[in-house]
Amino acid sequence: MIAFCLLLLAAADPGGWTVAKWGMSPDQILAAVPGAVRLERPEKLKDGPAPIALQEADRRILFICDPTLRAVAIQFTEPDPAQFLRVEAHLVSKYGRPWHRETSEIEQSGWTFATTLIQLRRVALRSVPFRSLWLIYSLRQPSAAY
Image: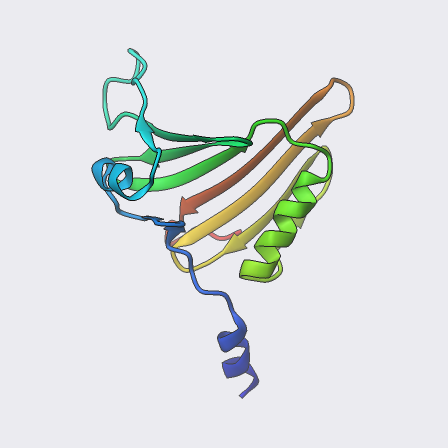
């Protein structure tokens, strides 16, 4: 009975990021995500579909396809020191507590679902004025675990 209750409380697998779902083609992503644009493919990267991006006020969202959607990487453009905690609190309210958490100069939290891995990573180097905050949704490989 307890195991059944825990299953009911578990968050549903997002299966992608918002309306962009695993397995979608680049054209399907462009149709589903308002404002998304196909980027120019660097000359060195001739194979595979061109990357797709969406620029918002405080973040850039990259859709990685190979040949269909495999990951969504969200880069916060100017993260403040408390933004990691705000984003993490939002993810906790949506998906529950992270299954994995590390703290150091590279702080990260992770959630694992049947088809999706979610990683929130903050880099704040004390020796140089550098801060980076990424939220990455990726297609989980069957053998992958956090």
